[in-house]
Image 1 (cartoon, helix red, strand yellow):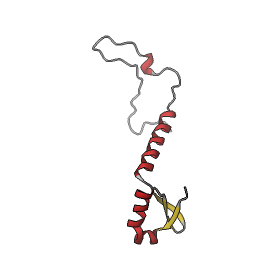
Image 2 (image 1 turned 90 degrees about the vertical axis):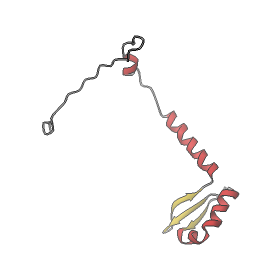
Image 3 (image 1 turned 180 degrees about the vertical axis):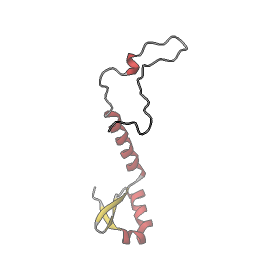
Length: 98
């Protein structure tokens, strides 16, 4: 599928036509500013496909690298929250080492 590039200045006067071509004709149109691509007009179907692809990509990037603190925590008794050992040190402002 070819993509047409239209300058912003032209697109202002043809916006309704461009939107119709995208919505009903399935076209993809790139709007340029100073000769450089700036934004794209795509159909809702294209947008939904892009969003689904992005969600799948985010999900596939999640990896488990061994046991987490949740896995290592003592099992809780029924009705009790799981307990985690967390170490923290409170340092007053200005006492941070350089």
